[in-house]
Figure (cartoon, rainbow, N blue to C red):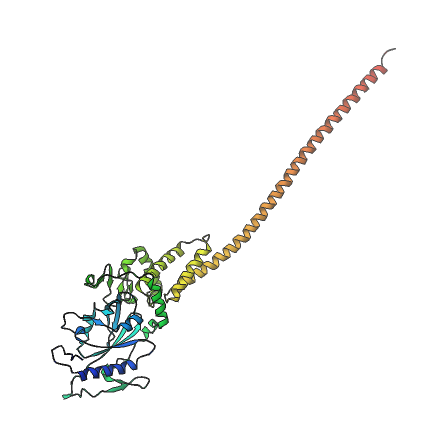
Length: 398
């Protein structure tokens, strides 16, 4: 084993390293077994003063529990301060942002770190200092003596972990099990694309996608210009047209929260879901009563899938449900009225047929009347002629 040194060059003996690792293992044992964790000994590559500073976690742990793509992970220290750290999944290496974390927490060689994965891309980091002599009230504390305190369940834990067994309850909704993680990985395999080379990652920028310097809370968003769409510490505003982003902003404002805030998927999937949600919201507002009921049901099925993935779109589904009910009622009435209209048309046709028949009868009657009148006139004429002739002969002189 190499003997690590402190930042001023002093040696940290192997006993100190073993002491730190032992206490770190005590911390790990008392962590929730529901969420994965690992222990890492701080070496020359992780502390200030080196040519390069980066952190490598065990590859087996990373391959099993971390996303299969480059991105940003959040490290939460013992003071609940959050750091955005760039992650390269091919090398299982954290580089961009690690120097800030290391300097901010004054890490030294020989310290041990316990990484507790409390979210898909979020670690709670417990720092266990190496057993170095320190002065306490003018005396030197025994470096080999571990001071223990008790957790809520009565288990003992090394005081060197600095009472850092707290995990925010607000992060509980970010936890998931391994089966969910494997499902997500399988879905990501089909659309994964190679990430930029390490040489191109020279700042907190991946192309037009930037790392977020801090965690944005929706309460801090006062206007559209303050609105940033962040996923796993990445600002994805450049992925969305202005209209789509404005629509999503209005949706978030209506619920006073980021609709994707509880999701634990990759940034690529989340950005696609946000775009589709904005499209559906615009389509809902522009739909008409005569529009296809299939469209409403299709939108609801899509949003249901998003809701199952913990996106807050229930209010959109509620509106669609109301529209579907009205649309179905309209269709029932419309179908009923269509049937009535068909009956009206049939009766009109029958009436027209009868009218046509009556017109024909009327013409026949008129013709008969004219024939009768003609015959009567003929009869009268003949009778009058014979009567005149009869009278003429009868009254003729002898």
